[in-house]
Length: 151
Figure 1 (cartoon, rainbow, N blue to C red):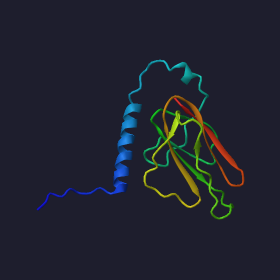
Figure 2: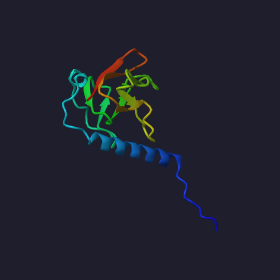
Figure 3: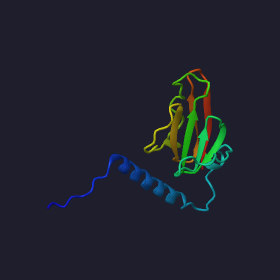
Figure 4: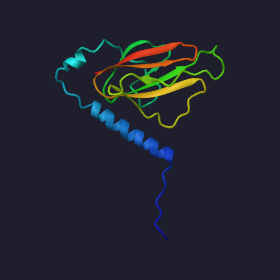
């Protein structure tokens, strides 16, 4: 009888990849030095911590009600869930969340989840020290934008 190896489904493979990525970034984040931050980081705008995370692997979460500047460390993951207003026409959604500078904050892997019909999700990863924006808009012209400071 041939020796058969179990097959891993695509969803399980993506989950394992995300888990390995998260473990690697968390380990890297824990290896910070106590050296003085560079001038580029110290000149970054002031920021506050995002709300508690919605997803278990994230450092924080933002929604359409958040504004201002939020802090994120390199390698940390931020989840964003923008919900269309309750009085909006059926099928109304926020546009895809755009990153101003993907060298500072990159798009993360959202894994395998399906958001509710009126929710636009985004998963982002702090890449390098600096600041950038996350932005989206509704079809009626309503805009949402926050600044993410990676340090």
